[in-house]
Length: 306
Image (cartoon, rainbow, N blue to C red):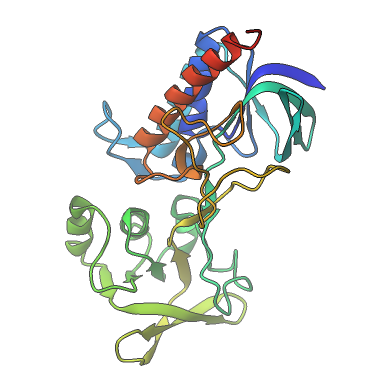
């Protein structure tokens, strides 16, 4: 079993920032990421609200985070963490390829897309149902596409998908969007986009692949069938906070609760970014969280022998 000072679970912006600061403090630091460094921004077409970059692609920003962190000595390994458990004052992190023992653990696991939970969603996953526009958008060139949701992600990814779609529906359960005003304005100005207000999806239909989406108007109760070749749900996500075999304080939605130093209810365990309870879910939040958690972990380890 390998032993480190700080083990970071998740290599998104928060995890990489925490790793950079911890490595700069000369702590033996390891970051485990099950996919690729960068987290969700690696699957984001364009980032326009990260200070210093008026416009940068998500993959490019992810690469800059990674290279910057590695410059200061952060080690990044590809591994999928399955369980975290206490071992005296230490924490044991069990993963697919190895087990690790750490003085401090920083949880930067983010979340996974929230499913619609309607008939046809699972059956047509990979056959017209997708949760990643930048990954799969090009497969639906010339098709009519439906996006579900009204937040930043839904509208931004919908705008991106109009590069490929002949027409795009944005289906939202309310009569106005939740996305930032500047993003809303771009969507409204896009001639390919049609909004389906006060409506929710109730079924995805097709044969070998998606052929239609049935939506229900919440005010009238009427059903409408949209002929579409793809459905992209962007209705939020579920936090990946269930790795511990001991109780950690979470809110009713599963988000880990921390104090201002990113400390959780478990001593030596910190949570940052989208997995913790907070008002905003932005790259800037994750970066700030990662900085705070690394500094707090450094102080915690410094006092280890006191």
